Length: 434
Ligand SMILES: [Zn+2]
Image (cartoon, rainbow, N blue to C red; front, side, top):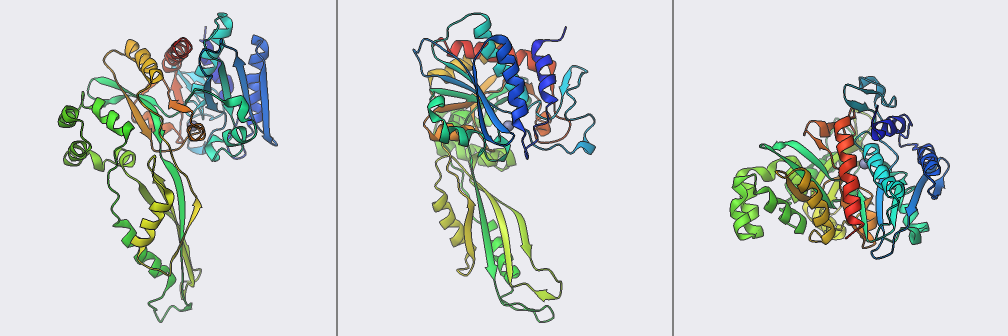
């Protein structure tokens, strides 16, 4: 007999919710069917044709503010010809459930669903309203998902706490012990366009004002920009806990000073590991450049698009002013394609302790730490409304497995799915009985 989580995830993965176009309406139908069967009322929110989110609520005794179990229905595209199985086949074999979304984040959606249903099935009254919320459009900015919901139906989603994606457990980063990350913050996406103009001309007579060459010179200067390490509450606590596994962090664990931490990170080389560096610094990546169309014509226009990611609490306008100064060319035009400001959720809360205690009981040897997600998630919309939001995904995977997220051959082991469902259920039960 297959575990219910395995059965449900296999069905859910068969629904192609590739965004774009999303087609999350079919995903909401999957959940609606289950809620009908379980006798739970639900609300459907249609934001556009084929785009929809669904929520269901189990009423509690109101002692605490509601708890939202948030997950997204959409998935990123899968390059089918590179996969070794059908990304929308929902195959269950060799101990794995296979398909796009298994990890990001239909697997967690099923864990949340089963944790939610357990209250109804066991006739337990939570001490707060428990809201299951599966949304559209997370992978493409959230305009048809959480952003739409909070703009148009905010009254339905006032809450004290949101559990969402963003955390996970890694089994091969630390020697002999797992590391569980609970994400409490994320970076803000800011895309910047820089353009240059200059006189066109024949390519046989080079000009100093060649728009493309000016842009390249400015980009070279931008690459030299100093993006110093910035320690916030989340990273401060993260490294304090990691010091239990990494001795070179011991001096910081002893004195708790940010400058000691920075010294430890620099001297050990850890600060230059790209994934670590991204959680410590504002980053710039030049990803799209365009100019010219003929090899013998000097282009009159050139532009580059930069993917800028700012740490929580960083002001986009201040960062832009630094970028402009570093470009060192007043004739270049720098504009935001989009602008974002990120907030961190507090780390020292009773809720965080509850989540941590559940992990601790299952994995006594593990290091459990708050983390900064360097990508973005829907949590940012809730944090902006002042609602604490944590990324909790109780699975234990390898660093290599993490590559499957947005990559090829995405799958989740049945063991992870089943254990994750148990842990998730326990976390929700404890959070509803504070
Ligand atoms: Zn996701």
